[in-house]
Image (cartoon, rainbow, N blue to C red; front, top):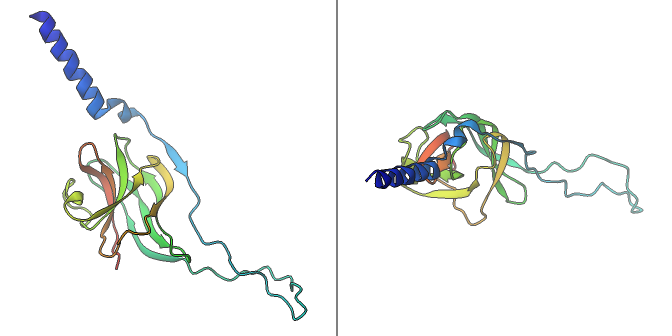
Length: 176
């Protein structure tokens, strides 16, 4: 009988370690990526005879900031800011800056149509776009928005834990 209890306890501990990954309470990672931007596409002006006039001021790219927001705590303390960017070529990114959050299992970055600050598990109740795994718990990261994604009506950027279906933190954004 004691061995059955020992096996059951060992199985429960193994499952708990797999599910909760408690060592992540003591781990973190940092990444500092440069912000995405359009590279100048216009060549330097040329004179009538075809020679460059030596101008070094390229045409200003038409990159746009579509929305901004600051992270709010949810299941875990989370801080930092976000910018949703559209580059001149139409490529869109979620730019996370100054992020500080906890490590956890199966973390992803989402755009959600649910308002920021709602119930921790509400962000998957409506429409969402997965942007990829969280690259690091701290720093500045870029997440490309799929070209086919409809982002109109999205209301928050979310650090989402797929394993437990909860938000670690969210930032309000309003995308028209």
